[in-house]
Every structure is written in C-alpha cells, then in structure tokens.
Length: 239
Image (tube, rainbow, N blue to C red):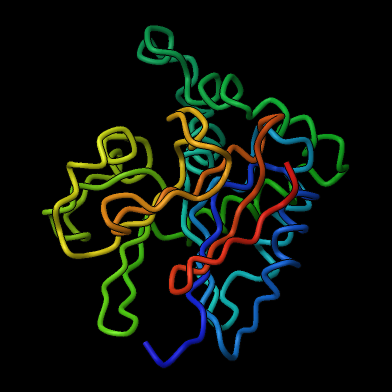
C-alpha cells in the first residue's frame, strides 16, 4: 500500500442516506491521501436505499475506495436470483430467500425500488454490482496488517479460506472479543455496538486489534459512523 494519511472505514449504512452523507462530508475523504473502505449493508431497514445504492454504484472502482459485501446485499442477491426455485419443497420448509430478505428490512428496499419507476433497471444494475463486491480485503499500512469484512472471521485462518457464512453472518468476535489473540487488526460491521452494551460510536477492543464499526445507523438512537484507524478520529452523523 502506498503511503496514506488516513485509513478510513465506514460501518453499516442501511439506507440512511442523510446520516451517511453527514458522516461522509465530515470525513472529507481525499482520494490522493486517504484509503476508504466500506463494510457493506448499504440497503434495507432505512427509508432511502435507492440514493445510497446509486452513490455506491457511482463510486465503485474509484481510486482508493473499496466496497465490501454485507449480508443484506447477499440476501437481496439471493432473493432476486431465486425466483425459479421459490415453489420448491425446500423453500416451503425453510422459507424462501425472498421471504428472508423481505422480513429482514428488504421490504422497505423493495417498496422504494418499485416507487422509483425504474424497477428493472435498478434490479439489474444492483445485481451486477453485488456480484463484484468482495467479501473481504486486507491492507498493510505502516507495517501493520488490517483485515476487513462485514461480520466476522476466524483470526487463525487465512482470509482466502474463510467461510462465506462466517464473513457475512457470524458474530463470534463481536460477542467474544477475547477470541482474537492474533497480531492483525480486524475491522467489523454487522453487529450494532448498542446491542453489546456500548454507546453509539466505533469501539476499539483487544488493545485496538478488534474494531467494531456498526453504530446502529438505522436505529432511532443510532448513527452512521466513519473512523480513521490510524488516529482513531471518528466522523459520524448526529444521533
């Protein structure tokens, strides 16, 4: 990694466009000097997923910006791709991917897609985007190794060997920080810090080697947060 001034990371946005923009403007990202990583969950739950996803698509691939996949992008993708199997016995027994998505905040997103008047165009472009979103990224800055993923990982297993379900869904490290005894800094979203008893701001645990970035952006007492991992400066929307 070439020299950077700030290693910025954004927690879950969940369709909260105004809160996201407030935090993003405070951070004042400079692509010439900063690296910015997003931990996924751009849509669902919040009331304005369409402008958030449009913004992500507009900025995907731009210099020093990395967008990861969250479990909500995964649910959306599987719901849209699973139409042909929705009548199967398996989906009847276990619930279809579409039902799983709609019941976990996807109903708001689907309603907003329909209201846009561009349903097919949005669905097609969003599906293509999700296909390109990686599950993790690894960065080395100033001799320190950083691992980024949406939800969780097994610290002793190489990133390329991690299970998709772990990276997108699990909460082991968030709930049991002591499980991380390694040297790398692991940065996670997915689990709102308020649910763990912390106040609504990013949390540095395990001597700073575990960072929790989901500050419950979609919750009434939550906010969307960005942090510089090098200085620990926090940029967030008002609660």
